[in-house]
Image (cartoon, rainbow, N blue to C red; front, side):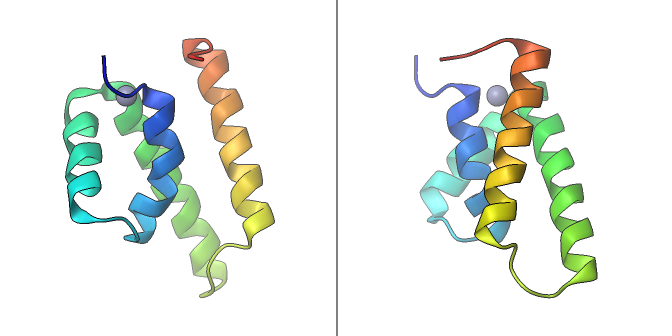
Length: 84
Ligand SMILES: [Zn+2]
């Protein structure tokens, strides 16, 4: 089976920051290419990150990043059910 969507979600922050190695990046992109749910998630996260960064040039504070992660997970679980 490979990774679950939530595993990818956990890596998406790094992916959006460009802070992961290229093989993992390719893996995520391949998954996003074939998984509509994750594609929607990436778009949502991109928009959120963009909004946060437009107000401030700095990296998201860790607490905010964690909050965002939890929020996305909750939303995900509500929509698609628990995966773990
Ligand atoms: Zn997925």
